Image (tube, rainbow, N blue to C red):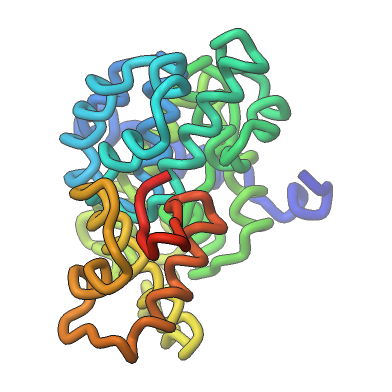
Length: 301
């Protein structure tokens, strides 16, 4: 962390915020299945599933996925098509492929054992700074910062008193706020406060940090939502249809382009084929589908 960032942090105030959050968490923390294990594989599966997916949707799928693929070796040995079928419905199917690739790397390069240090974790396929910190913290009882959108929001509001999406500042605050020992309970507590109270539209009146929160002291200014740009709206639309394509392919071994189009888009016509080809080509580049040009059909890889 840069010295300039550390010098602007009020460590006494940080300690006050941390005490308030941990006091609330001890009595009110969520009992979630992935919080009852330190198995690096189970932790990784939960972290990948929880990326951009709500907890209530993840819980049943997490249990089912672990029943089907209980270890790194079982997942690594499975065909990608089977992994995508088990993942179907969770969305963002690229996550399933990256999880599968990570399992293969653990088996091939680390004899089936996930490394425990941050730098080695970051070098694993599909693992970024947040996931590396989460695995080090939850699986190996480490002391590492883990910053997602919710955690960053809690810290910047309560400590700086402002709404900000500045990643560097969020990480600086997260590192400054780490307790001296293992950070698992602290990180879980931040996540619970973020999901329960410190949402985009915050519930400051009931928040356990309100007496220490500088955002509350500043009058809890209204959070402004930035209007999505046209390119962002189109990107979201593409993600939606990409998800429908993969879901459709979990139900049949091979599907013609026309059959596929009719399953994913109401009123699909031949004139829509270039649009469908573009989506399928993107999925093929990402390794999520296979295309048989000779038979003009699509399948899972």
